[in-house]
Length: 411
Image (cartoon, rainbow, N blue to C red; front, top):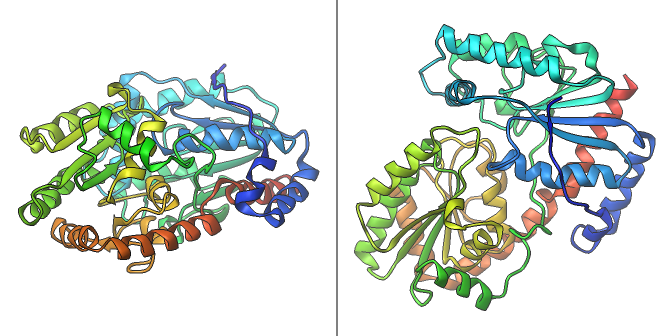
């Protein structure tokens, strides 16, 4: 058996005051015909990264509306995750493809996990490329299959995409964040469904300014001086080195400024520690650059505090499937600057709900603008919060899945 993941209880009714009664009633109506249906989510890890954060909310909400829903994690050793990290980077545009041995490793682990997957599901929902071979290998283990891609496939390495395509092209339903991520050759129904954040998770619940400042102070932040913060995995696509470069430009004009780079280390990301160490090296001992991760006791509340207290929140990605941290920052009504890539422009209208940038220099210029004009930051932040309320909260995401499940089971 694949490893089951335990999740907390959640009630859809608790979201009514945030999302509105109409959406909650629509969800219950869609869920009625699906009551008792067996659904399994299959992913690579239960810890670290956006996919696991989403599933810790989505799975219990699916149960609350009547689905018999489980979440299971595939088995993999270091050799497998080394190969899949290389695949992830190649699918986001890195020129280096897997070698033949690494492809064989990916195929071998998919075959192993396909054997261990139990049968009898009404829907098997497979997340990302790591377990993408399951449908091709054991289509009879579920009546309906969905592949959910969480990464940016807009400019993939063509060799990598060509090798993966036979495993994903015939999934009956496929989901992407934007239409620009859909590769040529998909034969199933293509759905464009951006993900969402849970406003009731500890990471996104309202913190008082005093509580947020208290937490930041525990990590050495001078809470009386301006703070720029980026929350993300330590990954070259998230460009923490570029954020440090932008911070240095700002510091020339505003010497009091501080920078916090806060991230979690995912179990399916073997490069994470190497890039964490590279980020520390790039900071070159600057005492005003604070580089923290979950092994420094930075959990959900701490991330919330850093995002809530920061004068400017940044997500300066150079590739980004969606970027849940963008919606998290906007939900807290913080002044926001994001890379003009991937799913970030879905969440940020430049100059209206935040700023979009394409270089460290632009990031520094916008940071100085926001740090010098608190009223502008408040205006952008409040607009951003309402944009997230309308488009990027979990009940909307649940509704979209229920629509797809209904169509899949009907067909």
